[in-house]
Length: 304
Image (cartoon, rainbow, N blue to C red; front, side):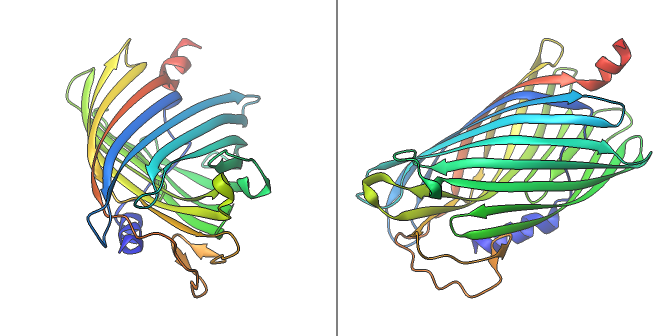
């Protein structure tokens, strides 16, 4: 069922990354929910915190260096009577954007990361991903994109095709920017400093479990969709968002020696013969809060 939901999210939303008239230099997100178990009445509270830091540096008219850091922590009980587990992912974002022609540009990013419970760092905690995207400038208010994301994980290799759209209405009230199936953000400005919107964030990643010599890993398949109200401060350079949404994240625990091989989105290309140690988590509502420091590129261009 969760794989079907992820596929529907991919088909129903069209979007993209690094194609906007602003840069979110710093973003802090805090989300909280209580996930049940589809087999019994067991529930666990899930506390998720995500921090993103980005620094683009223009080196020439055609070349922009992209640097950043992403850190995420999730705390939950993976099974009934299990101790609370802290799953942490730290990732460097290293790449560049290049203007190939008047209409076409490309974004290429290397994404090395450590993902585990950080109890005893070893080779199984290190993974690496890569992102490549071609961007076509359709007109002044719209862009379309095509790309591919790939990552090595504890469960095998993940391939994610990307198709995207960036658009702002002529009156600048409606805005959509998304990268599917990774993320989407659409909002409508009711006033200069207040807007309402919705966002979508998905992930497919794994965490090595070294605590208690468990010899296991967690495979996370996450879809979080939310509606939000946003308040802009200091000429909209500070954005505060209150969110309520739907969380369908599942955290499956598997033996480190059992892998699924290559999978596209959440669909393995070969038969999944792994034995799962815990039960599947059910979906639930969640509450969230975002704090964003945003740099407006249009204002910077006017000041030049």
